[in-house]
Length: 102
Image 1 (tube, helix red, strand yellow):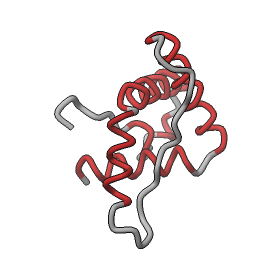
Image 2 (cartoon, rainbow, N blue to C red; image 1 turned 60 degrees about the vertical axis):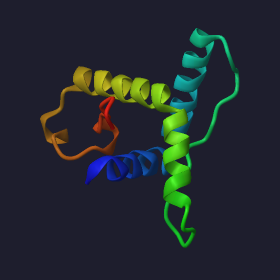
Image 3 (cartoon, rainbow, N blue to C red; image 1 turned 135 degrees about the horizontal axis):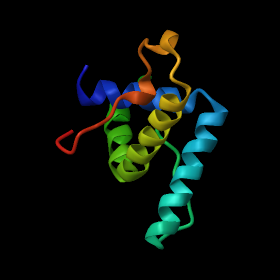
């Protein structure tokens, strides 16, 4: 799928659930408090539809929120490691870790 596909899956997984959006906003506030530069949170932008630049705008927002996304993914993986249920071995968009090259 590549980087764009992984980000698309991640953003859609966050945006479809109110609890995930709230958890992502909490992670943003934690990171912002550590960096001491802002108390605002940004919403993820979904791509799709008929707008030709929607993928570009999604990628720009994800680039801006990269530290927050990485921390959220680490947090989700830690939660899943605690639960460790073998039936959850199927694909989960929240586990798509992005490398520094991505």
